[in-house]
Amino acid sequence: MDIRHDWTREAIADIYHAPVLELIYRAATVHRQYHDPQEVQVCTLLSVKTGGCPEDCAYCPQAARYHTDVQARKLMPTHEVLAAARQARQSGSTRFCMGAAWREVRDNRDFDRVLDMVRGVNDLGLEVCCTLGMLTAEQAEKLRDAGLYAYNHNLDTSPEHYDQIITTRTYDDRLQTLENVRQARLSVCSGGIIGMGESVTDRIGLLHTLATLPEHPESVPVNALVPVEGTPLEDQARVSVWEMVRMIATARILMPKAMVRLSAGRVRMNTEEQALCFLAGANSIFAGDKLLTTPNPAPDRDQELFQTLNIRPRKAFQNENPRVKFEQIPQ
Image (cartoon, rainbow, N blue to C red; front, side):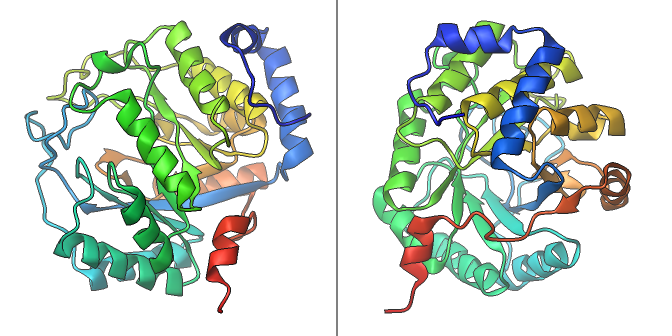
């Protein structure tokens, strides 16, 4: 299958609405053309600065304006972050992502400390990822020079549904951050969340935006909303596994080379449901007890999952980004 960037919403809708077994078969076929179906990338996500965020993302318990159980914490000490990275590596993770509850990156001491964290994690041989909110082109370059491998900045939903979820930044703000990341020759990680009251048309709109970018994201997280008490979306119903399968399979067909990540919501899935998602083209997960502040399967459950499905962890830097690799060659 050729890599395309000219998808229409109508063509994507035809794929998304295909009979589900046919859709899974097609996605699995594409997956095997570009990836080893027995390999899954294991990533760890750590909240290095928690809570107190000025944004109003309706799904997020870290927003300062909502009354949730999340306790605001300042930026973690670098040595604690590096200890967590070593533990993640020992547990089998090959990518370590650090998240900070900021609206945007500011050029201050905290950013300097994050750059030190990036350098330290990079020295451990892990793919380093950050999700820090909006950032400028210059800040993206500083992160790259410190050894950052990837930057996560999710679009969350379609352009049409976006202002029902977030009003403190625009969709174009998010797209500009992705452009800044791309221009800095970093690997792009961007996906979305389903189960936030959006329509199927909105899900197709999100996939259309991602699949028609000049370059597809190297990583596409597909999240199922984990409702948190105290947020505006606390009463949303659980997303079914079939909705996740349709999103994952369609993403796999549209963006064949991407790592499609089965992300938030996995804690509610049993082994059989996760196996369906892997069959449909997912080949990356987050490991560890928490995803920032929401629950995630315990490490022993993931070990059992991998043994049952005969899946092996993907090695770090296996799909080395040529832009990043070029930058890391000593001059």
